[in-house]
Every structure is written in structure tokens, then in C-alpha cells.
Length: 251
Image (cartoon, rainbow, N blue to C red; front, top):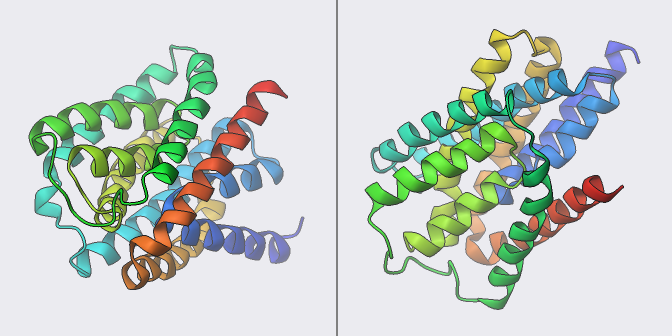
């Protein structure tokens, strides 16, 4: 495929992925298959995906911070523990088999979708926290950060649900905070992939531009329309992700 066709295709796919990912997560469902579809080996596709995803999560994070939806000073503990967890996950994936995670994660995500669907008031507004933020970010930063570095799909869903259930965040505030953590783990993983030469920069930067713009549009929609808009998109993307992972497990 010629660059005149390939690069606009990658840009467009990344724009759509950035739009969806900034609202409810799951943008990798679009970008990873596209990267592998143009002939990139799996490891390079994953590395290039982390490059372009860092643009998207960084764009959404920046917009949410500027809008006051999330404050970075409230997230430092989460950023530090998530970075450490992601680094450990990237290291562990070189040594361990991810088969068990591939089989377990779809059912955990299905439980998240069912619980969100059956709890219509969940995330409607901020509520009472069930855990101290310092302990929450220690546990979830290490565990979810590790998961993102080790495997990845559904990371945003796990963060959003954990923030709503444990810290009592509204879905809007949880979505915004999730982007801070997503950017952290994406960036840590990206550093590793660059260090081992598994990133295609031209494709990644072109897609990153699409991700950046798509995430800007999506984050504006999130702030403008709030939880009532996020909720159905969130449930839909979790279910799509569940279907995709089950298909990959049993095909």
C-alpha cells in the first residue's frame, strides 16, 4: 500500500480510536488490528500502538486538567505507583505466559459491564470514599499498572470502576482521572519498546496526531454531556472488548 493511502488510513483509524478511548476506553480494539493488518509483526505493532496511544491519553489528560475535571496534585501517588507497576509488568511479560490473564480478563470485564448496567446510580455523582486515596493508589496503581504493562486490554475500564467504587468518584471524574493513569502506563511501556527497537516512528507519529485530535473531541464531549453520555458508551465498549477477547481465546 502506498504512503499516500496508508498514512491517511492510519490517521483516520487513530482519530476514531482516540475519540472512543477518551470517552470509555477500548481504542486499542481499533488501532492494534489496523497496525497488524498493514503487516507489522505483533511486538512492533504493540510498541507502535503505545506510541500513538500516548498521544491520545496525553491529549485527553491535558484537556481534562485544563478544564479542572482532574487535578494532577491529587494524582501524584497514583502516577508514581502506576509507573512502577507498569514497569514491573513490562519486565514480567518477557518472562511469564499471559495465557491465564487472556482467559480470566473477559469474565472480569463482563462483571464490570453487568454491575454498571444494574447500578444506574453508580457514578452519577461523587459519593463517600470507601478507601483512603493513599492506600487506593498504592494497591490499584501497582496492580492495574502492572496489568497494563503485562497485558493491557480493559485497563481503562478497571481504573474507572475502581475509582467509582473505592474513591466514590463520579463517572465523569473517574474517566478524567483514568486518562492520567493511562498516560502514565502507556508512556512507561513506550520507553521499554523504544529501548528494544520495537516502535515504527513514522506510522506511530501519524497515528498519534489522529489520536491527539480524536481525544480532544472526545474529552470535550465527556465534559459537555457528562455521565449520561459516558455510561452507555462505557458499557458498550466493555462488552465489545469482552467479545473480542473471548473470540481471540477460543478461535
